[in-house]
Length: 178
Image (cartoon, rainbow, N blue to C red; front, side, top):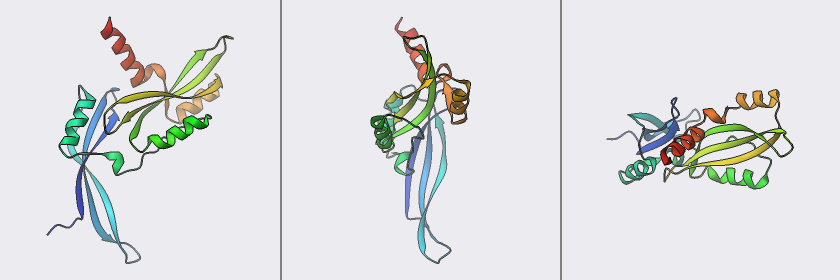
């Protein structure tokens, strides 16, 4: 007799320490338990499947996993895009992205405007969990560069654009097309 209610296989998509897209597989098991109040509750447990891979073609690999019965991890855990935007349309889009997408990185860049003023802009790189498509989106123009602003961004998990997956990938694609 099984001591769980449901068992699933799931995959998650992350950036590893080498700035490569990686897929991690999990078992997801719902087990019944009795809480402190004596009520029956269902607890969801995530166990590492034992496989970690860096696919050549993310979209194809995600399709294969879905055909094998794996589900994207964001079906089990809600995803929050922890990003601030001053544009209401971008903020609304960020709210809806969590349903099918996962943020991979937060990036900042410095751009020089037509008045030769250095501004700081933020971007995110995210993946569609059901297709494996990767996107980059400009989130905000934070205004004039300051050391305090850059320090605050770094404290909130942002990295400089040249260290990002999106930048490295764009350089790789440019070299490939030459």
